[in-house]
Length: 260
Length: 103
Image (tube, rainbow over all chains, first blue to last red; front, side):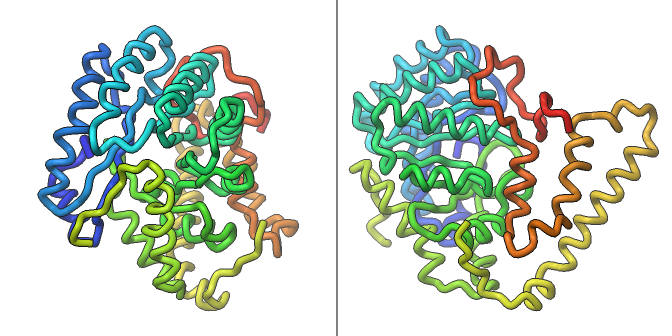
């Protein structure tokens, strides 16, 4: 969690977290050169696993150029060229979070090229769907791009789903992710509502731990919300352990600490 | 939408969540009051405010009753419903309502 303090790893471990997957994402500012991404990928594949390991947490990551920095295709392609070298690192489980931000033509071109990269290297895919008014359209365009590339939807997690996108994502065979935020996007309460309405197959929750207002303890807070509504421990584990394991183990790299 | 129910009784839902949502309702009321007390009327015509005012009736729309799809309908209202990619991204952020919709 490059944008969080080591203390957050400690709090997550205390709350029962045993493994995390960290996507390559926007850092709150645009990096000025591909070399900036090279160092970022080093951080994700070398530094963060060591920080997490101090607290017994297995750290895995996804690599890509995120859609917010993908509007310049020349720049984006320079970054994409760096990725194959890092795919050999033991904690890398796929390509992500790729997707769209403002649903632009250039973003789509780079999305398609990164889908192709994942296909060539048999990598799982993590998709970031756009925010707010752009989410519905961007989710549909992204799913079409994945289908056009012949990607198995069972090897793709479409993240940041909300009430207006969850049904289409699940109906098309993709996994659905709910990244939980304190209030700006999907909250723990709404995530539980969505599970109650759309079931617990191919869907899971995760905590946002980014540079903006977010809370790495959102998952345990969602557990509390489920329990106070009377949901079973079995369901709690299904959407925060069993389902993630089913999806992530397809990478062949995802492992829980030996103590678990 | 599948009708897998919340395990709580409706009375329990009210007991658990009413105060939290009473506070949120007051936040919206106070926000609209603050807007009217502020200088100038540009904000009153802002697409986000127009979209918010259009969304509020969905909360008490009787056609939502027994559908439990208010959140879905509000999100649909606030979304861009076009299908083609935009020519270029001129900003990195989203507004929260579609600037090209006539709310």
